[in-house]
Length: 87
Image (cartoon, rainbow, N blue to C red; front, side, top):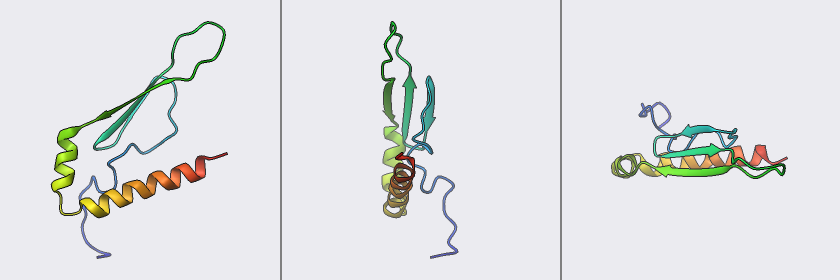
């Protein structure tokens, strides 16, 4: 199906980037990640990450005829981004 027209959201269930910066939000169609810098004294502390799930969007995705391949592409994008971000 190389020339098949796909939905605009195809392959975008997860946020585009794993590279989160302080006090930012990054969202895909279903999942959203918020990163907030914790206030501390002198020592650095890891930021607080929060994941939100849009359950209505997830249900819509699951009922889509392209769910399986869309999910696989979404996961492949995360795997590739993870592989190239490892330093």
